Amino acid sequence: MRLSLRLPALLTLTLFFSGFSLFSYAQYPTGKFVVGEIILKGNEKTKNYIIQRELTFSKGDTLVMEELIHGLDKSRENLLRLPLFHFVRTQVEKSRSGEAADITFEVSERWYTWLWPVFEISDRNFNTWLENGDLTRLSYGLFLQQENFRGRLEKLHIRAKMGYQQQISLLYEAPYLNRSKTIGAGLQISAARERETGYVTISDKLVYYRADKFLRRTNEIAVFARYRPQIHISHTFKLQLTQYNFSDTLISLNPGYSGISDKKTSIPVAGYLLKADFRDQRGYPLKGWYADAEIDGFGLTGKADYNFATIRASARVHIPLTARWNTAVGVATKLSTSGLKPWFLNQALGYRRDYVRGYEYNVIDGDHFWLVKTNIRFAIVPQNIHKVKSIKATQFNTIPYALYLGLFADAGQVWPSIENNSNNLPGKILGGTGIGLDFVTYYDKVLRAEFSLNREGQTGFFLHFMAAI
Image 1: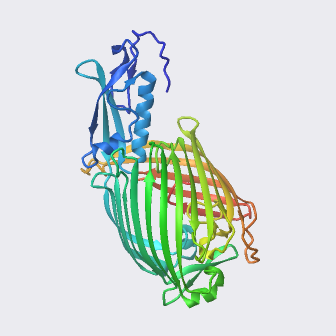
Image 2: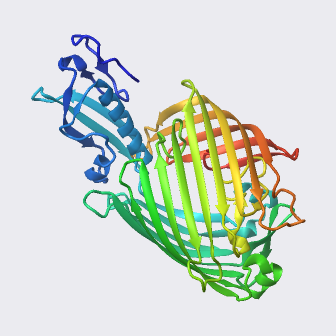
Image 3: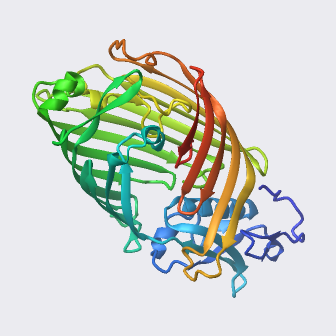
C-alpha cells in the first residue's frame, strides 16, 4: 500500500491495522512523527527482546506515512515467521504528550511444550508406505518438543524411538548469545540403529531389506553456529562427525552401499548454509521469496574413506495475483564433486522436498540434479478464523484455516554418477502435472491431496503434509 506524501497536510488519513487500530495522520502537519513507546502485549512467556529484535523501527525513530505502513507490515511478517505466534495485531495511537506516536504489538502465543507419541514409517513418504500398507514397518516412541524454551526462542528437542528404526536424539539451540543478538549456536547428538533399511535402487524404486539383527548403527554429533546480522539473512556454520557400523549382510547385498571393504567408517563434515527469507509466513507462504545455498565437505582429510563436496541451492517465489489467486515457483539444484561416495549419501530426487510430483513412488540416484516446481492456487476458503468458545486456552480456541484449489506442473532431471541398467529415470527429463487441494490450519499444519499425471503416463493420488513450494 502506498500513499502520496504530497497530500494536503489538513487531509485526515485514518489508518487501520489488522482491524485493530486508529490513528489520524493529520495530527502531525509536518508530515513526520516520532515513534514513542513500543508496547508489547500478550507475550506471557516470550521475552520482550525476542519481539523487539524482529521490528524494523525503534523508539525515537522519525517516520513518514509510507515508512509507518511499511514498517508495521514488515514487522508483523517478521514475527509471524518465528515459530512463536498464531496472530500479531498492531495499534498506533497518539502519545499522551502529543509529540509522538505510541505503537502496540499484541501477539497470540502458541503452545510451546509438546509430548508427541511417535509413529513413523520406514518409507521415504506416506505414499510409498501406503502402497505396501505394512504395519510392521512402524517405529514408535515419544518426542519432547520444547519451543521457545525459557521464553528466549531456544529450542530443545528430545526423541526416543523404538521398533525397526530405533533412535535417541537431543537437539538444543540458543539463537542469541551476544548482546547485539546476532550470534547463536546449537548442539545435536543422536544414536540410531536399524533392522530395516533401503539398500539399493531397482526399477527406480527403493528396495528395503529386513533382518533380525541390526543392519546399520549410527552415532552422530554436530555443533553449529549461526550469524544473523539482519532480520532476513542468516549464515550457519556446521561441524559434524558421524560414525557408521554396517552389518556383513548389508555390505553383501550391495557392496556399493558403503563403497569400502571395512564395516566401520567415520565421516567428518564441514558445512556452510546461507538463508534469505522474505516470505510473509513459514508454513504456507502467499507472498515473498526464500533462497538458500549450502556447501558440505565430506572427509576433510587425506586419510578419510571419502573425500567429496556437495553444493545445493534452492529458491521459492510466492506472488499474489488477486485477493484469492496466488502463484508460486520453486527451483532447486545439487552438484557434487568427483570422488568415492557411499550409495546412501548419493541421493538426488525422491527425498524430502526434492521430487517431481507424479513420481512419489520413485527415487533417482545421482551426483547432480535440477528441479522446477510451479503452482497456481485459488482460495476456495480464504484465510479465516474459527473461535471455539468451549475451549478457554488461547493457544487452542482460535483456529485459523484456509482451503486452496490448485494446478501444478513440475520438471526435473538427475545426472547419474554411474550407469545402472536396472533404472530408467536417471538422465531423463521428468515431468508431472495435476490438480490438488491444500488445507492449512494452525501450528503450520498443511494437508495436501493431489491427483497427478507424470511423463510416463502414470496417474496417482497422493497425500502430503507440507507445502509443495
